[in-house]
Amino acid sequence: MKMIIRIFFMILSLVSSISSASVQDFCIADPSGPQSPSGYSCKNPDQVTADDFAFSGLAKSGNTSNMIKAAVATGFAPAFAGVNGLGVSVARLDLAEGGVVPIHIHSGASEVLIVIEGTIRAGIISSANKVYLKTLQKGEVIVFPQGLLHFALNGGTGPAMAFAAFGSSNPGVQLVPNALFASDLPAELVEATNFLSHEEVKRLKGVLGGTNEPSLSLY
Image (cartoon, rainbow, N blue to C red):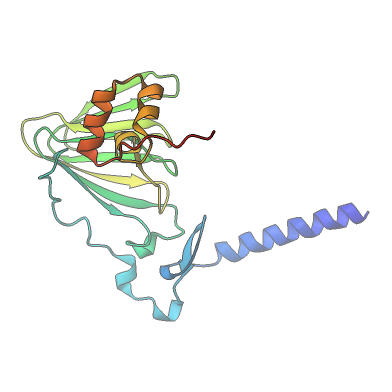
């Protein structure tokens, strides 16, 4: 009987917390407060304004004068404070001719990409290492499932632009080249675990800013 009572109160507590969350209209991100896995603390409702629900960070073209000839502007929390706790966010992708967004993942959400200008060639790599390639024109859409490797590149002769929507207010992003060659992962381990030569690893770490320090011996 005691166990049943405990379970009952656990369920009651859970339902109560869910009910409280469902009656809250919004939770504008307050970056000055503590952050939890579910998002940022809520701004005092009395201090919320219409500007908190709007975001202008995607209005202008990004600077594509860089190594990958691409620019990504994100509307994640807390930069776009209004999406906090709502399970959505947005981004803008600008690709100059020859531009590319390297292979990466979003561990926290799936992504929908809609082409606004130009031609974009997109790819998805499944956990079974099957590759799905699609060339997209203006107005066409592709979905990248959560956690799967994917990429996008300019498939045309002029600039390309797309908007993306995510199923999280902070979907996270990890670029595979950066993880290997822009980090402090010792070069010898990158070589051993990826079957690359010392010269190639050193070159790529030099390009992306990673270190070439040897690993510390445990013995």
